[in-house]
Length: 276
DNA sequence: CGGCAAACCTGCGAGC
DNA sequence: TGCTCGCAGGTTTGCC
Image 1: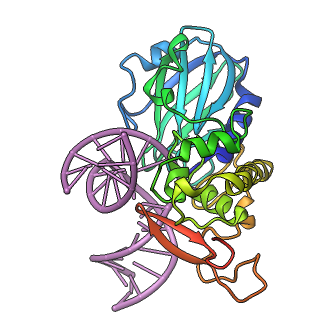
Image 2: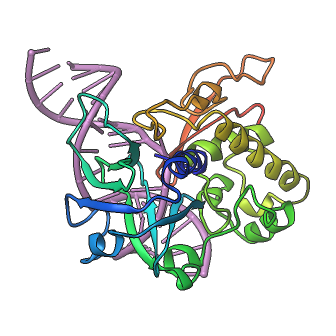
Image 3: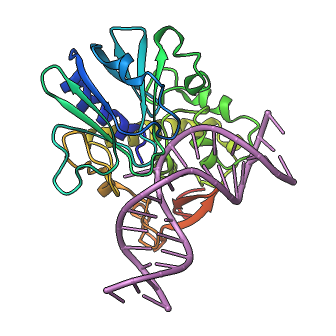
């Protein structure tokens, strides 16, 4: 579910409560998520101090006072809930629970199990297959119109699909790609290689703005995303096109409406009048 | 290599 | 009420 803004929000919530804390207990309720957990998952985490919690692309990274980094990906439906799990949903799909030395608990729930956890050697993180091919962080200094158009050069796939490719730019998902293309006035069907020059100059700030605004709003809550404190993100109220098929385009004075098409198996929402 | 459909898994809302 | 179908924020695999 979560794209960059939601993962960032979760990271910040976890950092507030868990940075500097020591894990006194780890409960593992099943052997696997999307992929098997390490055989010695619990042993390698128990007793470790969490030095820092940060984000790379859509991954949550927990730096520990040992050789490993705990890597968490929320997949489509993963959540990490601090403290008591809300009434009525306790128990089901609670795959892993972390208990810290001050009594803080963090529960990982993921009913679809598209998420994953892994322990990766800290000195080999960047070389790990999960991270080796990731493109630049869209909110970082390494992302620019020049960098983006270089990554898109020669690619005949639609720009919509190219932006979902995490090797082009990392952290975008279906929602924020739709919203960024809308803001930049670029058709999702346009060939990726044709997004260069002025179009790339528009797209980069559009991506940055939509992500920044979404983080400020605490992310987007559609089906089951909630922040670590149980609060709902509210950026979904600000969507211009995502999930708004048939509604009037908010940026058009004419009576154009938001259309939905399927590209590479994913829904795309856009305004054919505003986006060229 | 590039691009796309399918697979992974569960839940929910719409429609009959 | 209850069933089936389609759809869902991601990533990987396998096929053409």
